[in-house]
Image (cartoon, rainbow, N blue to C red):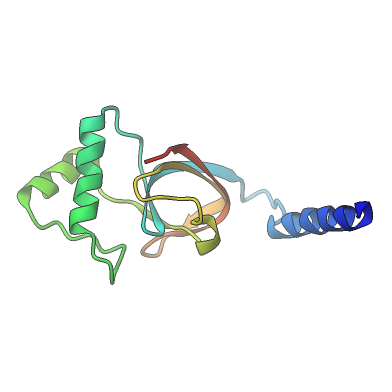
Length: 135
């Protein structure tokens, strides 16, 4: 039994080490924070007050286009004004295996190796996700 557990532990460590690319001087680990929503994270600072956070999440829930998730539709002057004041959406795609414990509205920290690849939505070499505030 101990031999089996040791073998599994070594296997896990090797797999983790193989998934982290070698450091080549051009890349580094960067932490991004933002709000998780349906497989994406909107990279932004956390809202200081619950009223703006609730309004932001309500807008996402009401106006999110499910068949084209990163294409946000501003349908009213109110939503246009809100995002003009608080910054536009800055989507980063989250791999499926990182989404298992995430709920829409969670404020998360994403540890990325290297830089974001700017295609809509942006993609990245995600190493770890930490939930900073559950929704």
